[in-house]
Length: 575
Image 1 (cartoon, helix red, strand yellow):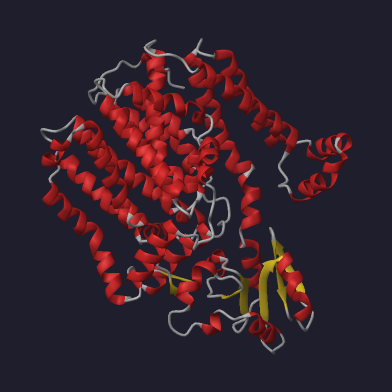
Image 2 (image 1 turned 120 degrees about the vertical axis):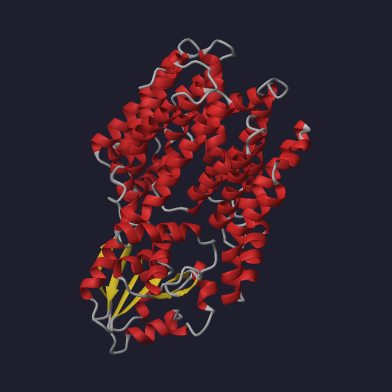
């Protein structure tokens, strides 16, 4: 483990390449190790693996399709990168996940470079390790998500802007063009927020710091031409081929997603507070103090860097908190600036230039110790449930239901995770500003160990529950050339594992738009059509959840035969 005390506050680039190689070799492990071991998890992974596969099959990189219907919810950058990975490494889970994992690792390297330019070598290294040991960040990078690609693009774009503004104004043409290029890639990754976020953050930064003269250095004319040259061609091409694209993408997927509950993802305004606290654990407890330091130092020599990072965090956090559509990965773009601010506070603490984290350390210690005790108790879940039921009989029924449906985790895994949490908690309480370097090394080491263990111990249970791989592989064994495969609701990974187009009934959700383009009626049957097809001479396989089967079983003739079970779903056959 690195001794963070040995690094001087130099601002040159000495040792930067060596640091980057070391970061890749060490932090690359939790991002890439055993990446292909788990089945694709629906809906996100099935979707973002199947779309690029269909692009390759059709030889069309312009119009995305999912289950062979048009799919315009996201721009194509992730599809293109995933298609390249599938082409290079084959149709495997590893190849499908590799681009997202690399984006997570590249975001850490980008954070290091930005931190090195804005602060110093020690702060940059601490920031990289904070981000690389934030369990929620690493786990989400191991899942196929557009948000991790967006996070890398936004981090690189905003980092290029602030570095060019504060450090490289005389010879910064290349850095300015990096800003425009990565902003354009952010648009191709997630849509208009790739432009809106940088524009809003930069405007507020100039407003607060009175740096309007930066506009004269930004190469606006040539930079905007570069931005359009990268971002515009796909939007033009897809609109020409698909006249219905613009209304759906810009109105439905942007305006209505933000202003209404059209996607059924409403959460309260404060939703992202516990999300951020959990996903950035253990570092989240230091966020208030780190942000407070940035605000207090806004008029100091390095104050503008802190203010920019603060605006970056608050604008994105507020934007998504106000949005009517909220998902956990939406917070990923604020992890890098938070890591840099927390690292800056730790660096000052190591140099005895700042007050400590007494309250944060105490609260973190108590929380981690309780989490550790909970993880150890999970190893004895039936006994703990029985003990609590004996004390509070009213909890007996809900506790029994919880025990029946709770993931079955190995005893050793629960104990290992619990001990690591407890160790972090005890050190946090014991340190309380006395040994910040020891606290930092302990938190990094234990979190790093957790990142290596959790994907191999806890994630398999989640993946098995949410992935239809077992059902799809069984369907491949049972299906003949004329077999109809039907899913209740979209199960995108079924098409991935079967290599077939499937029929979708019930709530078709994200396939609603595509199902209305052209004649798709045969592929999206209603309930009565499914019942009629079941009673015909055709061989039918239906994948659905148990409660969906309970609601349908009385209408099916002949009586269904359960031919496979996988996670929370079953597959039934009429033959």
